[in-house]
Amino acid sequence: MIVLRAKEIDFEVTHITADQKPDWFLKISPHGKVPVLWVDDEVLFESNAIAEFLDETVKPSLHPVDPIKRARNRAWTDFTPEFSKAIGAVNYAKSREDQEKAKESARKVLARLEEALGRERGNEGPYFNGNKLCIVDAAYAPFLMRFTLVERLCKTGLIKEFPLVDGWRQSLVENDVVKGSVVPEFDEVFEAVLRKRETYAATLLEVVEAAE
Image 1 (cartoon, rainbow, N blue to C red):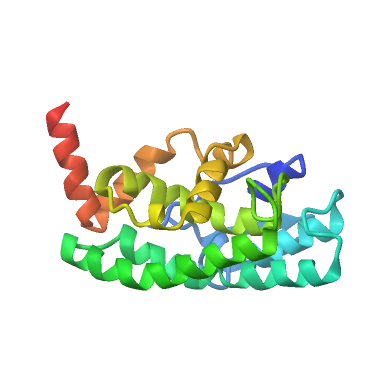
Image 2 (cartoon, rainbow, N blue to C red):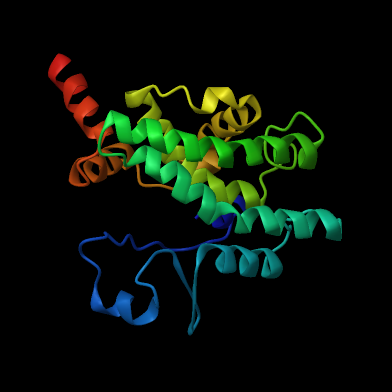
């Protein structure tokens, strides 16, 4: 969605919920996961593959022109699953103790990204390569959006330990392209996920709602 919006491509979206996946979707998605892109009679799956296809077929490119930087951008995009796993463990921790343990692993991943932003970018940003959204931004933004919502509840202070990553996060979650990539009721939908998974964050959410 972010790449589609960044490139101003006309598209139609069908939202799929995790517990109500229609048969037609399961037939075209090998892993049963979103996103899936339907182009004419062809179906593409996996976020990175879809983003690369869109960047190759619709100008202007969101990848750097320099082939070395472009390859390194692709490498950092491939690092997204490791980041997702680490930050997801913080988001979906069942207790405060579990969340504290998850923070230790997350720090290692965030430290890698902090180093990358300092080395790869070489400027003031605010995005991964500079002042323009790129494929790396699109890959990490959904996970940073979810962490931002959890951080409002849990106040772990985790990402504040990494100022470059934190500034990058803030720029992404405030970007109109990124904000428009999710449904308007995204906060409520994600809060429902936190409750369903019986997370520590959900218990704090209930405290907040009780106080209102």
